[in-house]
Length: 515
Figure 1 (cartoon, rainbow, N blue to C red):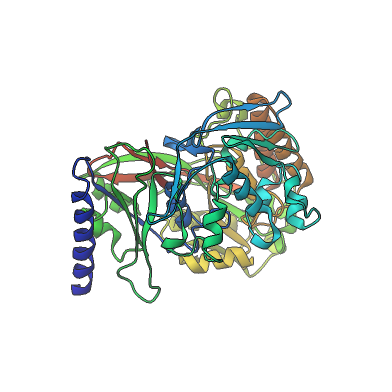
Figure 2 (cartoon, one colour):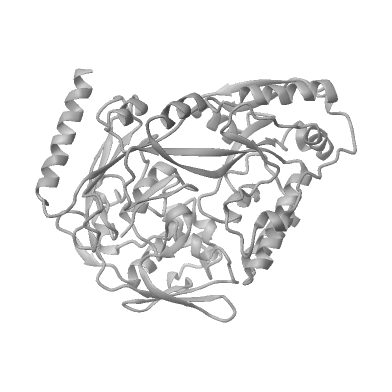
């Protein structure tokens, strides 16, 4: 405890000194927790939410995510799309600067976006995110090495403040893709100065947004003293009411206690009992963007379509925890899907009918689920019904986070309880988890018709037509029995006093700063 107290004393003494240097501002630190240390802050290579938490505050793309995951202009004043939807032209805002908080400064221009995309697709970068952007002309050929002339990539600077991106075909989700980390700019001069350490340390990250990385302290052998401190990039405009510092505590020992003691400004409730207690003292915002369901591993015994359908038809979910509501779809109600209500278009998705029996002949089946969900009792009831109606017996393993993730990635399961959370506000952000080749396609679902429908939705210039395609894709997934939707989860973000300049994206779980 002495070590913990000393660390907090030193940290907050540091913060007070920072604020006193800028006393004309209504400065305050914004403090929250992340669940692990970012592996990298290189936007073209980062893959996890902990990296995104920093990247979205330090970097700014052509577009950005506002409250509730809605798309807003980022580094641009305006943009234009050609009539055929394949040529996008962006007018970059002048007067936005890179800073590493030390000696480096340079204006962020169209060339920085060109270099960022070139890095994304160069084979040497080995970015696992590159495939998400193969809609850009010649990008796949560059990435594979088939095209060595990088100037043939469909991204070019027309002049200092004008950027052009050429696509192979229209893409209805392209604005969202341009708000994600892989599409962030990269300053070539600064990148080369890091000598291969770009994004791996505080002094190897330059910011074109409102905050730069001042301190990045992490010791994997210690439970204390792990944090990232972001400070204002004073070269860029910002609201005087925004935090002067942002402090991210990396996997704190007792996050709830830190929140009660006002060491943290916000806290996400973990279970129903805790949420009930928190509601007595704190205010909260509620979000319904997470969908829970069962996936079947098609590389094993559940390659049989009939087996999956038999269990799907026998699945009935009843929630014992008020955080969960029975739900029969994949796309949450809150997701924006073109004109009108998506659920009005989709209608009733509870249409799975089993036409064959035989799943009861399987033995030694194993279901995995993450620990701490509060769903163990409800899943147990589903298994009991499978036993009584289908003669199917299945064990269940409740695993901690690392074991669960490892089992999913290695295919070490027959059935898995999974949580679908789109990174942004679009049906595609949920449905792409089932596309062939996606690392999140844990059930190994492969269906050319499904891929064709998703591609049709993406290439449509009509939002209503896209919604119809997404509805068809959602129906196909459920009718295949690859995913059995169970419930939608209400997530609660608690705070004592809401900081109006803090923007929360419930889809990605990332905080960012307005203004």
